[in-house]
Image (cartoon, rainbow, N blue to C red):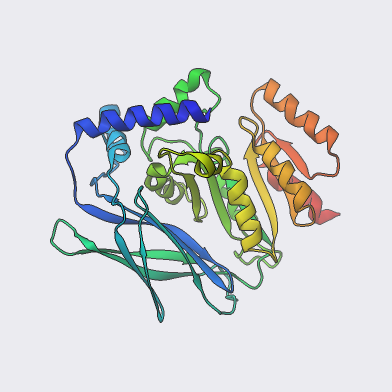
Length: 346
């Protein structure tokens, strides 16, 4: 699957680059996150394509906008200055335009009724926007809360967002990606209600953070971020993949994206227990089960959305072989709440 996706990605990007001229630059901050001792910040400096997605956009409009998002040029080795409270950090983008830093901090968790967000200022002196001003932006930082009971990590594709990864030759997946926009992409039924409910602790405080995981390229970040807002799905950091040329350790990391991300979060939030949500179309069950063998005392539930009978049969076989693992095969998003209710009644 990775070979197919990367081949398609490079073909689409090459085609799109031939169609569009260069644009002004922008900083695209990715929602970031903190524990008591560190803040993890990530973003990208790339072309501002000026894409505006509207509900009335035609299929052709969507195709043009999506091709533009794939065609964006990145700013390689650009200087980035990050300001957070008293700290000023200078870093540089890599050859794909990404910057990523961890800041050392020492602050107490928040204690309100909701999760709180802080912010950092980001600017790059190398570029000006179309108004001739320095390119800058603000990045949101999810803060830890003292009453968090679970960290929830959910796959996106065919778990939150209807993607059709398992369609014949992935044709439906490609159609959804190229010919639809944020207004015409569909969430799974009840997923917003389910995730909002999971974000509540026993006292009813909305303090369980949610992170989202996908094998999609970072170029889809804007669409996915806006999709969460539009569908009233709890906001949280997203972890996507860089589809640039990879060799050696980078290629290995690309292929192990989900596993590496989950291990990073489990180590970053060492004091927290986790709920993992995925689907049967890819290898989510295998990955989650392998993680459970390493972090068995910290993974409380694994929910796998069913797919075709053959895929479901494989998940059921894994459940039978590993009765100690808290894996639940579900048909509907709302089934998650039924399992959660059973847990609280015992």
